[in-house]
Image (cartoon, rainbow, N blue to C red):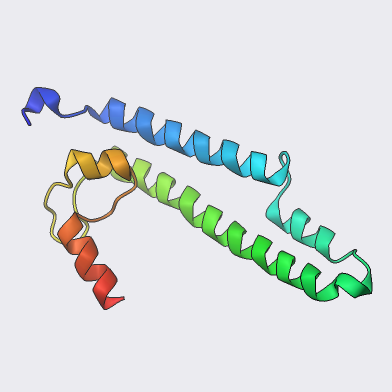
Length: 123
């Protein structure tokens, strides 16, 4: 890949903003609007006692989904901060450039594929 084929920081920024907006849109659709997962979880507590176990399970699922979504949003904010600092696309562990194909597939990638594989084996 030549340097003219490498996306500019502005293109990376646009991709990150676009992906983050899609995540926020998907979250709103799954919730039926702009309702927080905590509010949705609270709705499960007002059901009758016969469905108590199901309500607890659904509430726990809502909290787990909220944690996951919060982590995803945080990953986008961290990627934007790396971009501003001039370190976007640089492997966190070995400092090698993360291939553009990996960034295109997973814009918030912290590691090159080799380091990510090692990280997952050790964690």
